[in-house]
Image: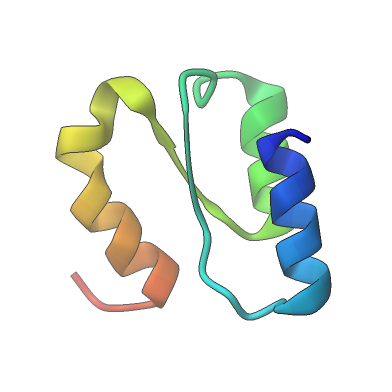
Length: 64
């Protein structure tokens, strides 16, 4: 299984579940497009320290 398989299964069973995907491939257009299709928050592994709090807020729909 891949992370995409896990996300797809989550969407089938709990479409409202906030998901954050951390990947070293976040800069690629196809990864960004797929994340947008699934409605997930995407962060690059290189930026995790700077982006994690913002990603959690975004995934939960909280104001900054």
